[in-house]
Length: 97
Image (cartoon, rainbow, N blue to C red; front, side):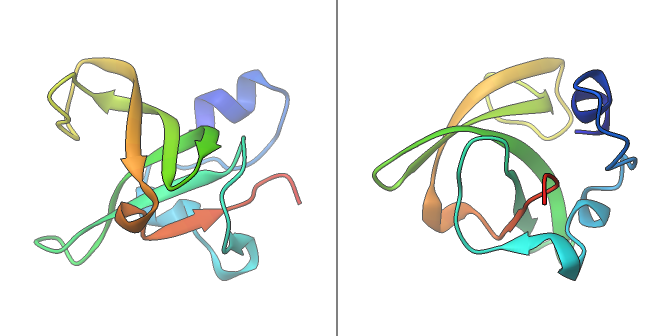
């Protein structure tokens, strides 16, 4: 996420630590394009992967995710478009406010 925001001219966020993208001051309850979303991994007991909302259609989030694969690994080989149900999203953060 930091690379994307930096390329777009935003000074923050600057972290590779997924949980660090969700401070209380940035949390929001709804998704819209540009919002960062976090996925909770119960085995790690924390947000361990994130994406950037590209669009929202009904109950689906269309997002862009890095360090993933077509199979969905969080330790993947590139940036991919992913479709996730809203229920699978643990947190949303707005870095534009």
